[in-house]
Image (cartoon, rainbow, N blue to C red):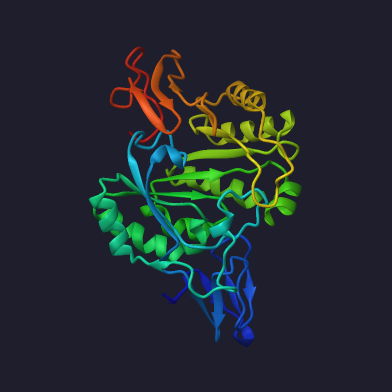
Amino acid sequence: MIKEAMLYERLEADRVHCFLCSHHCKISPSQFGICAVRKNEAGSLKTLVYAEAIAAAIDPIEKKPLYHFFPGSTSFSIATVGCNFRCGFCQNWQISQANKKKNGSLGYELIPEEVVRQAKSSGSKSISYTYTEPTIFFEYAFDTSQIAKKQGIYNNFVTNGYMTKEALETVYPFLDAANVDLKSFSEDFYKKICGARLAPVLDSIRLMRKFDIWVEITTLIVPGLNDSEDELKKIAEFIASVGIEIPWHVSRFHPDYKITDNKPTPIQTLRLAKSIGEAAGLRYVYMGNVFEGNNTYCYNCKGLLIERQGLSITKVLLQEGKCPTCKSTIDGVF
């Protein structure tokens, strides 16, 4: 379904300036933006993926991962093709790196009203805009989120955080939570590995918290690329500067897509990252893609609150958002 895009301006000679994401593409007629799903058609910017889902599924919210946003609930998850990053380690590259330049039809029609209907009938607490990058299917996510909000269903983005301030200002009244990939704390890493910049991601994280969106952060730790103790400290210290209540998920890399020579992340590296996060004052640090370091503990008395095995919750001691032992209020949306 082709629809006029949001967040752009017309320039001379039928060129357009897209300010949906921080690439700020200037696009000539008949050309695409970096995302390859937004096209200038005769001086009008079009989104080519509106209501064209490439994936839809009912997931545990822990898969996003969001551990402090209605833990144990399910989330109806949708995506279109496309992304504004080019990460060589992408684990969903078959759909994130697919684009409209090469193939006109890459999904099936799933209109916003139907997304919400299916989410509701599945008993899902929320809708997750995930798998690829929700920023590039912004119009689809925006329309869906408005309908969902009216029907008491929450919305969350699983995102690289490269949206502009204007995009966040537009969607935040309908966006309840986000898991942001903070892939590195190096401009060089973002440029070479992702084809992007670090600073806009940091700005998005700060702005999300200012807008009272519940934020959790994930860092996929890739051996030899972003696993130094110094870099992990910088990431942890940045998160703590925004809010010590923000959960940090340090996840295990496995070889995929274009980065297949690196070995999976050693467990010891994840344990080190977890200890670095805790030393920086973060209340909740989790290990991802492994079967340890997934439980939630009270930041005050250290008592067990939520026990997890993989993506499944096996024990819940949390009582109305409070620790049953010391009565401390636990950060999150419960």
